[in-house]
Length: 217
Length: 257
Image 1 (tube, one colour):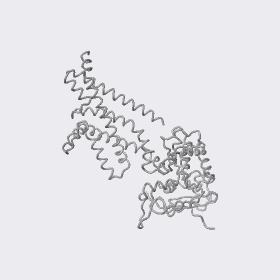
Image 2: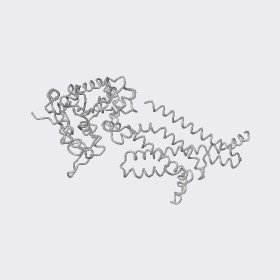
Image 3: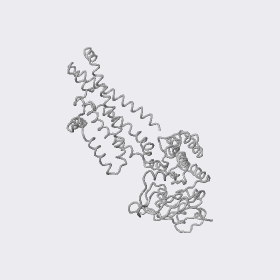
Image 4: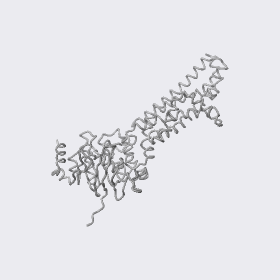
């Protein structure tokens, strides 16, 4: 145990950097993915079929593809197209596209679950459609979409570990590098597992407390 | 004396849901300050008529003229085109609507519900919108409930907030769609009294209702609809006291228990 703690202390900065990168990539993916998903969800819920079609296609392809394949595609396809993305950019792009599709789909569900009387009441006082969205529909959809949205965040934290495959120095890759040097395989994997678990439980608790706060009315 | 232009003129209104003809040519005039109740059995088209006036439904034929402006459609080269979102919104703001199921915004307080249109449609500053909201909530007897959320209010209170929300926009015409049908029996009267109050204030009301006694008390005119047409119309006393058609007499017999 003492030997492990000594090695952990020696490796503390690389592991810390890995943790920061994991959190940073997941945060960027949830932020951009929420923007993207907001657009996608509104289109899926309200656009005419010909405009809805490309968004539906995007969502179904993203949701039907393993995250690892998305990551590899985001890493290799731009290179073929002559665009050079570093592993971190490519990984963030893949997770953003993944998050955008999931958030778009869950927002669509939340929007369509709002009783039609809400839109009619908003229209009857003279709100235009963008105003109706901003002040009546999205605030209500956001409430019911909050728990699955937090869940998407948890998925992204876990999914970011797959970026180690394309050489992104996030928590898992840093852990593997430490293992390569110390041969303390079990100890460091368990340590990394605990770190992921703590982050995700914290995120879950944050979600629950947010839910309680907005769920009062 | 020349006849004043009616505030609302419905001319030859027809509407189909697929193959079903719901409105088969409805003509109706309302003058400023009129309180007109529409009665009739369910499926007669009375709620659909109201929803057409508020542009929540599209209609295939006829015109609706509100205060001199033909609403909902424009004609170009002999073809009718539905107006765009912006124009429809502007025209909808001229009428207020109160729904059977209240449709209050659950994420906003009572005052927030009333203020939304004042702030975003009429673009009033916050303090002024708040003052108007408080005035109207007081008018419907809910001054003390301004900061309550819909889930904290009874059905009758929610419906009164909805009435305040519609009237605060200062509409030319208020449409009331079976506003007591979703209420517990003991809460009906408070809402009817509120409506009676705003009628006495001089608001122009077009009411769809199943409450015959209320229709009789509050209306200057009553319209009986049957199968998508206006079957009979006249002053409340005549419609209820001396129905001309056999169908109306039968309808009134069946609604009086």
